[in-house]
Structure formats: structure tokens, C-alpha cells
Image (cartoon, rainbow, N blue to C red):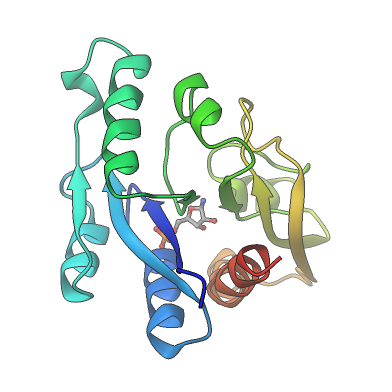
Length: 190
Ligand code: GRF
């Protein structure tokens, strides 16, 4: 049997999408190995989640490096030493630069809580609500140098129908936690 694809999950916060991916791996519905969780926020809850799941994590402070190029070189080495083949962004709050984009061409994906190209960038759910948009949703896309501009892999939307922000947010996360592992499985078995 072919070796499992090894991935690194990059996250800056709560890590509920990391959790969904780790749960899917454990349940056998996602055939991959999470070799490392990478965070730019050492206190992020995702670190605790990784620990609970017995998955190694690596925290770094971007401010300890003189440039994005330097910390990405460091990450590139680290990922190469673990034979990581794909980078999965799950709430990672930084743009990926040329070093990692070059090393992982078409092998970096992201999940975003809007129906792209509508509402890229920060607080997409807030943007969706403030605009009074008819639909909200989730997009999984390849990562390029722009902010949520890479080509779309999977998308799901639903009607807002006057629901509160909390209700919309809850629905978005429920979709994310199902859509991301399923989309990764599809990508890895293509
Ligand atoms: C998710 O809504 C994801 O779409 C966005 O950041 C959020 C991360 O949530 N990119 P979590 O840390 O996975 O709970």
C-alpha cells in the first residue's frame, strides 16, 4: 500500500478545524498522517488540542525573525525533515510567502468562512452579516500569494434568512468541520 500523505496543519487559534481533521483521521475517513501542527501563537488553544490528540506541535514567534522569508525558510526545513507533502491552513492568520508557496506549489489549501470571491480577508462572517448578504457559506481553496484568492476546490452555501450572527456562525462551523476533511480526502486520493 502507498504510504500515507503527510500533512502539516497551520493554525493560529481555537483549532476546531484541526480537531475535525484529526477526528476524521482517527475515524478512518481521512487517510493521511498529521505530522505536525504549526502555530504562530504559542498560547493558541490548538496547541492543547494537538497535545490531547498526541500530535506534535511547533510554535514559533514571527517577531523573533527579521523577515517572513527567514521564518518560512525555517518552517520549510522543519517540514522537509518530517517529509510533509501538503500544508493545510486552518485558521492561520498570516499570508503565506514565496518560500513556502514555491516549496509547496498547489499543495497548500485553506478554508475560509464565506462564499468566495465574496468577503475575503478578516472577519468574513462579520462582513457577510454587515453586508446583509442573502447567502453565507464556506470555501476550501488552493493558496496563492493573495488574500483568499486561490482557485476554489469546494464550496457550500446556505440562506441567511434573517438568522442571528451566532446562528450563522454555528452553521458555518458545522459545514467547515464536515467539508474540510471530506475535501482533503478527495484531494489526497485523486
Ligand atoms: C474558521 O472559520 C476558518 O474558516 C477560518 O478561521 C476559522 C478557524 O476556526 N479560516 P478554528 O480555529 O478552526 O476553530
